[in-house]
Image (tube, rainbow over all chains, first blue to last red; front, top):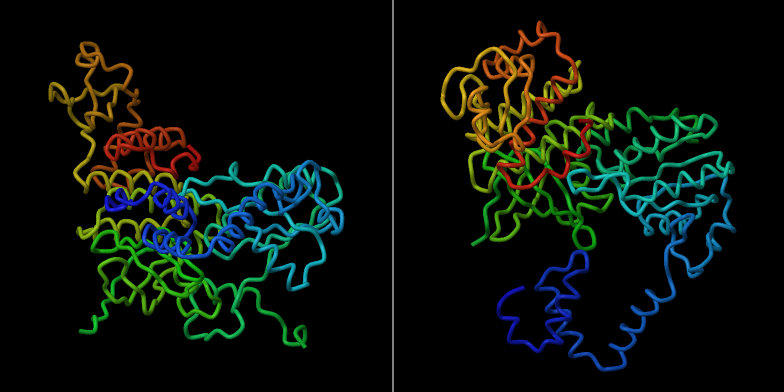
Length: 210
Length: 249
């Protein structure tokens, strides 16, 4: 925080610091947001603060699938009961689960890891919701695990780690991962080596696609 | 005046998502550590997306800026795909990238570090003992940065070390002979190093890599030497590297 902020009222300084903790918000943007809040009328600001409080008071993460739930005290959320637990799609973040859910492609349940393995950022497997996933598998209902981690270095490393520990401990579970390759609307000439390599490895017969 | 476009080669060491679809990343280049912003790189249709990934050796075209240089075009030179297929190699590659980052600075010639990193990353997947390649990398990078380990004489009395086990102190960057070790109160900060481990380090220091095959190296010797070097790194930079605890040491 710059020294110029010391001349501001304490309330504004606190607001700037609070906004700065959000991802992608630097000190300057935090200042801009704070001044915007000051210029807003009281009703709109109260709506924002109420929404923030409601999210924290009414919602938490499910102890089973680690997705958002309003059932704070129960072991499993309503989503866990509704969905087919024989097929679990493992994703890095809540937003990934929502994106897949909105597409309507996946009918099974989800498991949110809340991150990916990234040693360079100090994130190891113990910081992810892997233990919760193992508990779910131990119930014996799971037939397939779909690894839907992001196709990044961290996402791939997480997928490899999960593949290793699940295949070592459970022989009867089918392990799959989302196809890697060219995305719709991209130009081949601008593709990177990794994407091209995956696209060639996972190429399909033309008969299959028709 | 419109800023000119520059280009530079380097390895992307880390990436962070920023705003809706941007990525901020760090590159280790000939000119040291550099930070860039790739606007829209998270979008699937972006021409930058697949290239802006850690462990990619790339050529970047960018517009220089006072804060973050903005990337306009990227070409991959080597994506080290063989490393990306193995979990243990990814962890080791991340360790080497963090070590290179920690011993480099901005606007400082890092061409040797970059070439050492590229050559180690290019060979590690074919190596029978990947940890030996990493040990050589660690040893060479410390030596180049002026933190080389004194292997042949005592760091206290300067006498040539006899052929026996000796004690290594990362604080002084070398070994104590038997007499100096007994006379000094340094037992708590010293690591006992066997003759075999000293021989391994000496062979590496003389760049006689072919002779390493004849040493009949065990994992224990290599890992103990790596621990010794990592202790030195910890003392040099003042903190333990985040990736150290993820290596199988």
